[in-house]
Length: 276
Length: 276
Image 1 (tube, each protein chain N blue to C red):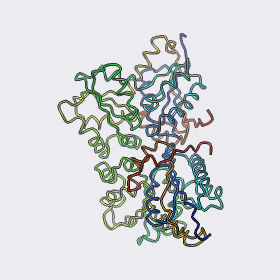
Image 2 (cartoon, chains in turn blue, green):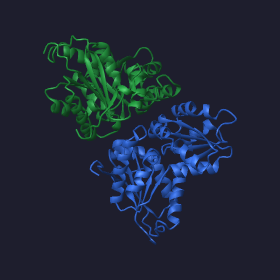
Image 3 (cartoon, each protein chain N blue to C red):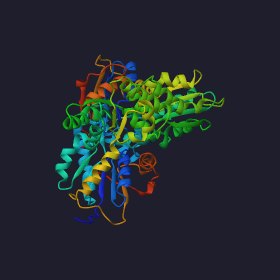
């Protein structure tokens, strides 16, 4: 499919996935994107796998109805527990999650075979990063740390505040204080890239940070370039439409933190997924 | 209805309302309670009024199907935006929210006619406390401060941590530093009573704290005692059944912070509200 100008669907429980959209827009400026944040039902990170699967199926059906050529699950929780049912349900539309690219980058980065993964409670409980890393290299030790409060701090826009620093010290200080500490930290939640500066202050300069938003954008670009999904669009119709299931005003305000630029609330389209 | 031994329904978006249940159990030890936490769809505080109304109606229908004699809306967001539709839909079962008792206690407490209310973004945006206070006394100045991060901190059990202290300094420090500051602080979110110790350190000893969980329990006891709702049960069948819409395990763990005592996850009954 040369010049396949269908859009790429990007889905998250809320606004955190905008860090993935941001990375995609930077890397694939000629592609069109349709982003859906299921804000009426966020967060997914504290919900059961069955609930997340049901919600993710509804969300991706909306993207498919928009004619997307690929679905990016820009949500760690949904990638962890719903990637297989989504892949089956959406076939032949390919589905790319954030876990596999992050795990792959972590494995490629570590030198001491010791990786730390920080994520929401739901992602940690599902242990998807640990399993994905083990599948790539069984000799790597993985330590998982839930950082639930980081989500609220990021959404508040406190990217570099005393409260965020204190939370980072609490969660990460003990992990990185001894000589056999992990040399690689995977940010296993799409909210966390905006906290990088504070996280860096706590973990020091020698630990490698793997940003799964960035690694997912690379995986999408690779999939497009491989030709399996049609080559990249060559039109100049790049950019993104944004759908949300609740409160465009809050989406625009909080989302700007994650997208890294202002969002006009009037461009956020309200949708109802419950009937899908 | 003398000796009306039907249970009292208590509803919240999640576990925060357990601070209200705790206050009710302490004050009304002979009453039976049915608590419902809509954990699959929490938080309500960031959702639109229409969504919260729809969710609250489904939740209270479950309580009514359990034969409750009264519904306590132990959720500030739902009390703020859904009390009237709930009251109409559930009639003749009476509905008591948390806003009115908290506002009334604030008005009775302030000496300098200046009250601060802290709450979630949704409650602040709806300005329900400000309106309820104005309806009682138009001369009182009300300042509202959204404290969204407090919710996550309370759920993490960080009742007295450096991160909570830093967040409290950020939110409350500026509010209380000048001589004309409010002399009364209303905790307008059911999560916040567990943060009282940290909040007290920031606001100092001279500001009166109004805990809306406590004031709501008093309002419920008054309503029962007034006879309008039947006198209090005289059986010894006190205690609470607990329903949740997701993950009994997480409900039990996080809920224990708010209820102030351990919760056995096996006693948390999973329910689905979507068909109600």
